[in-house]
Length: 190
Image (cartoon, rainbow, N blue to C red; front, side):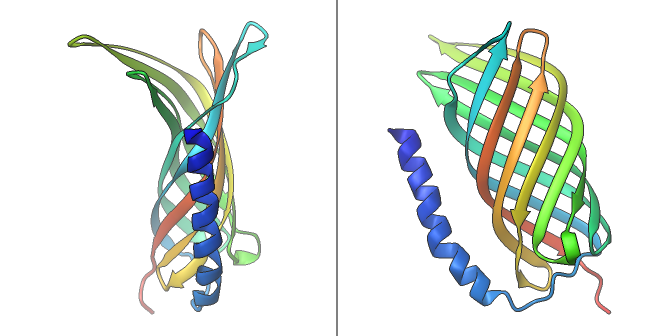
């Protein structure tokens, strides 16, 4: 039930915010120099081991990126994103951190990203006054897409979708996140 409420909230926010942002977009899509961004939203994750897959679970999603735009259509970044869920005192988190390339077709608002790096799975639970935790890391990659509405010369906001996948010793995990991204471009004054 909580997953349906979170998804409905995200859809409602998108329906209200995105048309207003599209109307407000009066600044050109300029990209050069340093950039930084983050995103928040929700997603679903699942694991597979020995040919069997788990049911997908809904949870909280977040992302962070920092990089440099070499030209209006291309930036190189350090990207990280993750998925987390707390249930019955146990918190499960999957995250991927990569060196990534962002491509902006036609130097417009569409963003396509991909990166290769590492993935990790973390679990912690509270038993009485003791916290037990475990972590495992391995290879990971991410793919993403989004659209940026430029609302200021150096600030853009818009929807994004990210897919993260990791392979660990005991299992493989993946997540699909949907959210809203906030991006700042440190564009030099001309």
